[in-house]
Amino acid sequence: MGMDAVVVGSGPNGLAAAITLAQHGLAVTVLEAHDETGGGARTAELTVPGVLHDVCSAIHPFGIGSPFFRTLPLEDHGLVWRFPEVDLAHPLDDGTAGVLVRDLETTAAGLGEDGDRWRAVFGPVSEQYDDLAPDVLGPIVHLPHRPVLLGSFGLRAALPATVLARAFRTDAARALFTGVAAHISRPLNRPSTAAIGAFMIGAGHRYGWPVAEGGSRAITDALAGLLRSLGGEIRTGVHVRSMSDLPDARISLFDTTPTAFADIAGRPRPRWRYGMGAYKLDLAVRGGVPWTAEPCRRAGTVHVGGRFEEIARAEARAAKGRMPQRPFVLVGQQYLADPTRSVGDVHPVWAYAHVPHAYAGDATGVVLDQIERFAPGLRDRIVGMHVTDPAGFEAYNPNYVGGDIAAGAVTVPQLVRRAAYATGAPGAYLCSASTAPGPGVHGMCGHLAARRALRDLTTG
Image (cartoon, rainbow, N blue to C red):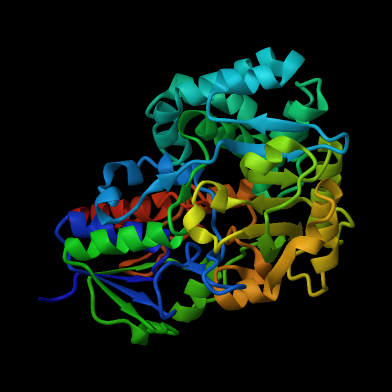
């Protein structure tokens, strides 16, 4: 049987694109340069034998709430979501912590005088998340499914995160929101930086912040299994360096950055900015992290950065190319929801800091100091460590230029540029996190790019 489509890259978006095409009867082949599928959703034994570490993506509020993934029988192909007792905790220097759990009322009650405000700001997002998601996780330019609802969300989403944070009075609520907003990896005083925080919190109250049993690789394993069941093929160890490396096909989709596609296609590189880098520590910790704030010991995700003003300063400094002495650090304790990742009392701890783009220094001590600030004695429990600096991220995945795991700075101008799936080359489309709606393990970039390619096939 001849080939209708070829997809370059087997991350969640590449596989989502291939599944969408296969569902419409196209013969699809996925080409992957690595020896295994997964892109940003892989899992490996990086420290102690048997201890499973997520290599990049780890916590998946957008995965379980993805409008596309929810239509797929991924559980039939081995995907099991596991949930921690506490979804997110944000420790403060006084030994307390802001705490987010799936139940909105419990979260609000724990925030004291800010409970009513938390409920007012994030309650509508969580209650109407399934109606909002197709628009927020959809193409940048489109007719909204729910225009009034989207407009209401957009009023808050358009704010700088630092402005929305000041709607709260307590350090706990301010820091809890700001830590989530900082996932955008931009200075938090910029317009629209509140959007990711508001939507991720809404996803958390609607679906929780789960992990995949066995590691994030279980997501791509399930997608790959589903694709094969639809007749799709996956070839690993295939490096695509030019268009001549592609087999003949009617359409080709690239789970790559715009600059990487330009190199493959032999075109001038477009103007495409990359953002902050990631500096990651995978730790094998005997007995877990000794957090001072007790809720952190039960939390699948811990945001380490102190008060909201401190997070904002650290993010602004990193964006300007200067290494913060107290960087914002995201810590994952996936083993609390999924004990299969541990060996005895040795547990995997996933931690990365936002650092300047292409940062070439050694930030290991700074990152450990920041965590130990809220968990004194951590170093004494570490029995294994694996470090991935920005250059290491780029070597692992060429989409992560300079350690930018978002595949491009999430700025307003680039949000508009992410709207383009068509490349201008006949039959060639981008389907990576560099397209709308942007980074995250939700498959929507690939799904939407494939739908655009299908429309062009139909009308062409």
